[in-house]
Length: 210
Image 1 (cartoon, rainbow, N blue to C red):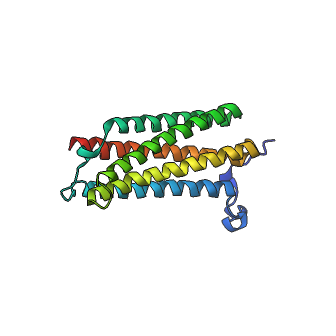
Image 2: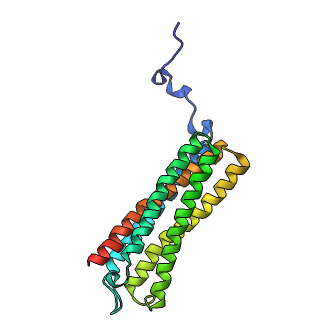
Image 3: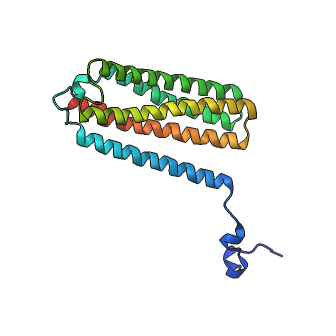
């Protein structure tokens, strides 16, 4: 005899209400909260992009992007960050297959490439400030330092997060909670790459061509 019963054949009153079923599992709540965090970050960057687009020509007689930006440095930064996204993906595959060496290797390469990107960005900021093109010089530079600096801050936090996660892998192994946190980090890191493509296009490429 077939004892399977379709859900739509069960009387509605026999199903537990939301209050009777209790709160959602922690795993679902955390995942939902992380997606909200990513979406809020995207909204924040969208506002910064809009502000930059409005203020890009407000140079107050100061230097423009075409005079300040070094395309060779920007190309190296872009290559480092995009390739770090690839190595981050390899790390995620190693985590899924529970391979420690490949996980650590992928994390190490991702960290080094992210650190190189950050070092080049800081050097760019310092060189601009040294010639008097700091954020207080014009509205354009204020918008530039805010947008690019905010992305750089996110990269810094990502590097700290990655370091903490490798410590957790060493201590707890590939526990379910560790794998979930590494998945969240991977999504965060790939989102930073997407934002950087926007920065590269709107700030550096369009800035030089204008």
